[in-house]
Amino acid sequence: MRLIPSRSSKITAAANAVIGGDMVLSPGTSFGVSIARERAIAIPTISRARDLFAAYAAQLSIRQFGTQWDGEDLVEIPIPPEPWMSRPDSSSTLAATLAWTIDSMLFWGFSAWYVTGRYAPSNGDFPASFQLLPAEQLSFTAANYVGNTPIGPIENISFNGTPLSRRDVVFFWSPNEPLLRSGARAIRIAEKLDLAAERFATSPIAAGWLKQTGGEPLSREKAKEAAQTFAEQRLTDSIAFFPENIDWKESGMDPSKLQLTEARQHSALELSRVANISPLLTGAPSGSSMTYSNATQAWEQLGFDVAPYLAVIEQTLSSEQVTPRGRVVRLKVNTPAGAATPAQQPDQQGANAR
Image 1 (tube, helix red, strand yellow):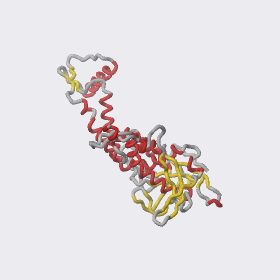
Image 2: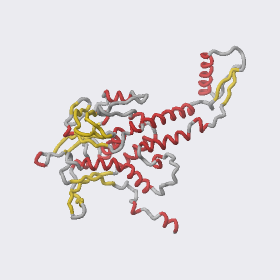
Image 3: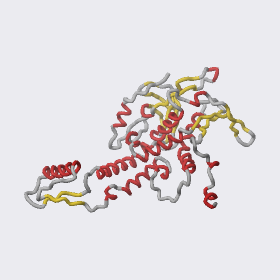
Image 4: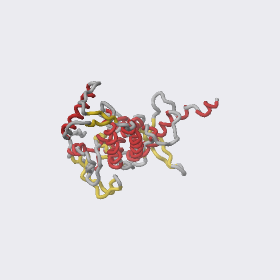
């Protein structure tokens, strides 16, 4: 059985309505997030971090191994992958499924796959196909939580009001706090800084003010109307007309300060921190002397940043809810097409010396 998600759930509507940072009790009923995903993903630094994680996920394949103790170490022995490992969700691609699984853990603190098919009981009755569930439309209860991870049994699981069996829902619990909660304050600050910069960017002239030099003082309404008329005229024409008792005074403030350049750069650095990604990858100024001399080093750094999410996916798929005891699931990193592996990269220092 497949679940067809509806984008009109009351949970999503509540999340979209959050403007001032009120708590949204979704997903679950004992913890929530403080800001809507739609607002977070509109911030370029957050969008960049998320898309880099998705790009890494697009290079992954799922493999499984048997295990054997050799007296000193637990040796992993490759075995053929299950059919679902090439495409867990038949309606999507493996790359999309893994990317959105990481997306859900990043923003909501967890992801969930619903079991849509199983092997015959004679073959262990293990899952044979899945469907990725949108986290914002899934609800459940638990007695206690450590961060965003439930402690004890998870009960009352439902998707858009449809009750689900705990056995058929595979949860991936992020080791990090949900970005929509831990990064809410940084996101709101970034929004305000961007709005301030937008006001300056859309102004037809440099910042300044109109000054009345004579005649009967204008009322507040008349003064506001004169300023609005002046701004609209300059927006459509290169020449504006002033009455004889009105002068334009241009502000001498540094344009870079009006655009809050330094504050917005610092905001990008803070957002990189809450997303747990290297600021060098998002283009945020870090003040560090660290650089990447080639694409392979940047790729390795991205792998380090996304590693906590990949470990959760591997360990969850290796659990007895998904695979037989004694098997281990690994995510294999495939080298991007046309890119050299680290072993194929030339020695930069040796090349420079030559």
